Image (cartoon, rainbow, N blue to C red; front, side):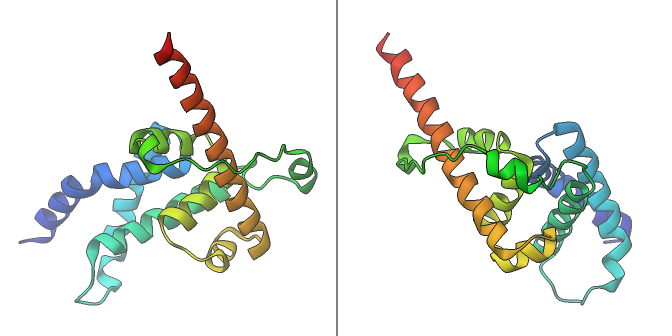
Length: 173
C-alpha cells in the first residue's frame, strides 16, 4: 500500500471517531471538524518520526487530545479566575444508576459542562490521565485538577438527576 492510500484509508476509518473526540472537548461541531482535519495533517507531518511497530489508533488519539488541549488553552476564558471559582455554586454530588443514563445523554450532558471542567473530566474519566499529568498539560495545580474533576462530577450528577426528574414527571402525564 502506498503512502497516499494508507492516509486515505486511515482518514476514512478514523475521521468520525476523531471528530467525536474533539467535540467532547470543544463542544462545537464546526471547531471539532476543523481540529480533526488539522490532526490528520499533523499526523502526516509527524509520521516519519515514529517507531516501526506501534498502535496507530492510540498515537492518533494522543495527537487529537493534545491538539484539543492546545486549542482550548488558546481560548481567553479557558482558565477561570480564582474569584470566579469562589462564587461558583457548589453542586451536590448526586449518584445515578448506570441503567438510568444512555451514552448519548451522558455525552450531551458532558458537553454542557464549563469548558475547563469538561476538559479535566474528559482527560481523567475518559482518557484515564492522572491528575498530575492533567495539571502539567493544562498548566494548573494537581489540587485544582482534582477540584475541577469533583465539580464536574457533581454538576453532571445534578444535571442528570434534574433531567431524569423532568422525564419521570413527563411520563406520568
